[in-house]
Length: 78
Image (cartoon, rainbow, N blue to C red):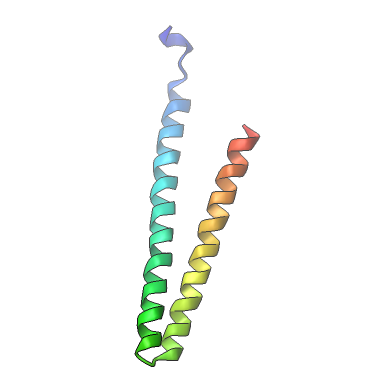
């Protein structure tokens, strides 16, 4: 029974899912942080800084969405 288990494959699944989970959570937290900072600076009247944080949040969200799309694509291919 243990001979049928591919431990290398299981190990790869564990570390890839751990790494992708940490990466997705980190990038999405950057989206939330940048959005909050953009709102704070917009209310304080610093529109240039607010715009910069808005761009950062938008780029971070695009990276997050691309990562999720890549994950779904890989899962559907297997």
